[in-house]
Length: 396
Image (cartoon, rainbow, N blue to C red; front, side, top):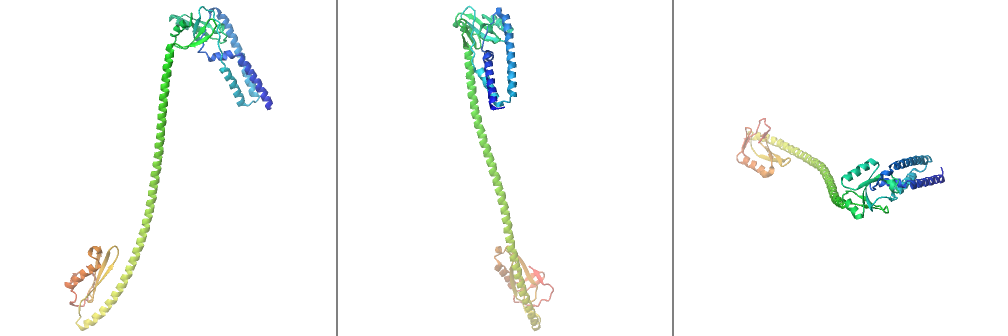
């Protein structure tokens, strides 16, 4: 369907809605003001009102059918949904917002009446009238379309009539709701509330204002508390992050430290192995020297034995071999073929060092001699027979 066709149909629909709004403006606006309007029903016109009510219902039914038809045509011609809904809502809004002023035409003695309440049925109006009469009010009711320009089918209960506005106002003080004071002469209306109701509303407004202020205070306090909780939550999260980061850094540092310790240990082990290898080489060289010396001494002893009935002046030779970690061992050999003396030492620095250790043992051998494993080593320089036993080494 073309845009022009849609625009034409939309224009037709708007025109029809405007006509409907004009015809039924009184009915729609009066339903909005149900609780604010007060009415009176004259007993003499009840039958006539019933017929008019039925006729209004019939017109309303025709209106509903027409609106449904328009809606069907509107949907089947494929108008833009959003545009149609907006137009419909705009038209309804215009109808609701338009003020409808009820004008009364009353035939009562006095100057004013006070409209109290409205009802859809007559019996409810009668019940309220009887209740007001018991309480001392002059009261009655009327059917609103019979006494005004309104077509709304309601019954309005009133109190009065009263001679002047002051008298009406005095009776209104006994009504705990907003009422409508109607001028009988010209049909004009005026809203009014009792002082008690105004004070009550004022107190309620003040209570609501205090409640609003308290709610605002609580809202501000809650917002502050929420902000503080968020700050604390962020701070906690940041602290947890920092703690995790610190723990991770410590873990990595520990791993790095362990790696470095292993590297250092390997370097130390490597140095110790090299030192031990060098010590072993030195010991091997020393043993080779000692072996050669022993071989020389043996030959010398053999010559000496032949010359001096196998006796020799014994002399001692001292050799200290350090190992690891402030340790070492002392080797003492002799020229008479006696077993080699060996003694292990720890904490060399606490004993005065290698030279001090050698001097102590040398002093003892030079002065007294030593008995080791049932073999007596004579003091240095003593003439002794060449040793011909099987023991090769003793430990001191």
